[in-house]
Image 1 (spheres, rainbow, N blue to C red):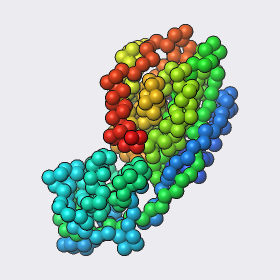
Image 2 (image 1 turned 30 degrees about the vertical axis):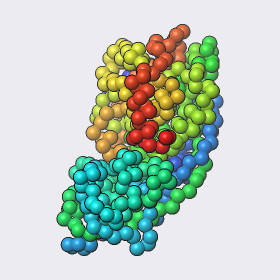
Image 3 (image 1 turned 90 degrees about the horizontal axis):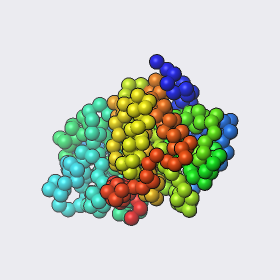
Length: 417
């Protein structure tokens, strides 16, 4: 069944190497993975450089949740990075079920601990700080492991500390009987310097026009991140390998970002540092969440209808069934769209992706077959744009999509206003 995408087996083997260890931003694992991919891209003839930027990271010291009444027991939990911290003894209070932070369910007064059905957005988080002394968030699925995630560090700096943890779905159900709990969250924050990996193959005819091929290299805290996003990083390098043997009219710029899981930090740093160059960027093709054996190919286009039609045309020509939508994807393509550069976000829809941001996102989920169709589509689309005399789409982002991009950064991500 292999053979449609010549580098599928290479992408799979590379993804296995990347997923052998967690790659949290600024960690040794991330640095080793970046060096590995730099060597690979250099060996294909790309000009490779490292682009530094500063980012804030966290390190967990301790997290525990104890039900005190009516029966005393510990509940396994996973701390939410940057949420806040308690003292060594923790905080104790009445447990109140608040669903999504609905005003009708919020208790009067202060000092209680909330049990939420989902992590609140920025505005919901702001309303809880100062009223709740802690927050317990239920996993949304009975089958999901504990999330290893964070909120933007700006939330704590602007609103204050709200120490928070995730618990499994069934543990949350059992906590509905609890009257009082004690929560301990201890974590440290620090600023680190990390790097985006940038590799270029200069165009032969229109070298100032740039086609981006991007993915994020980092994983969430303590997770191997096989599908999210060792698979996407490996696939980007595999596409770059296939194109290294060809003459391209436009410059191909491959960027592997750090800090995506912390709020698109690497791609935001990149577009800020390269802002003057982005007027010549034609499109950004972003590969995020790849490698699951059983699934399908999906694309989110953040751009014009003609860009969507160009993607669909390539897919039909190849015989690849693709679910294409026009929207904003919570990934690095959004950083480019915010600066006016259209993005094509290719990802693999799969039930296995439900393991993202948990310890179950491990190398066992990877399969070489999963890289065939997404790899073929990404390769042929990038090739089409990089070799065309004129790009086969309008380089614009419609007003409605622009509004969605702005809403994403202001409301969902909540870091840039």
